[in-house]
Image 1 (cartoon, helix red, strand yellow):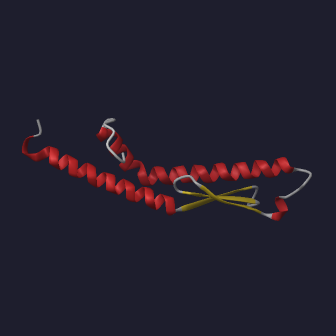
Image 2 (spheres, rainbow, N blue to C red):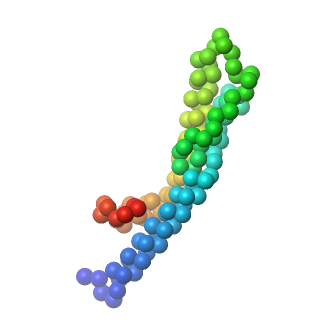
Image 3 (spheres, helix red, strand yellow):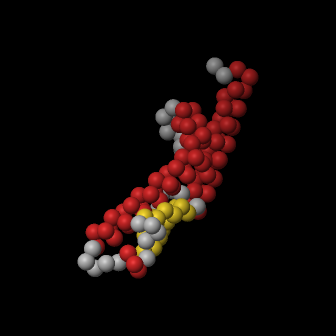
Length: 112
């Protein structure tokens, strides 16, 4: 079925790609992406794997009479930072994820 050791070579490539994917995931977890809303009044920071780690609010954004605007600014900043993190992850993991997804074919290999 796999003449000339092609199966062994295929398994080695899969293991290397899995290792590369794990390294990329670790790097993403350490990378932070920030985005702001309201001209910088609210800034959200998210890791490359999507964890919200910080929200910074400029005191000028705090108006006790208009809490809804602040809520909207926080939401917009978090959404923008999360979208940037997804884009970063896609750029970093894209080729690896596509290759592993297509190659494993749903075999349920560990870590994939």
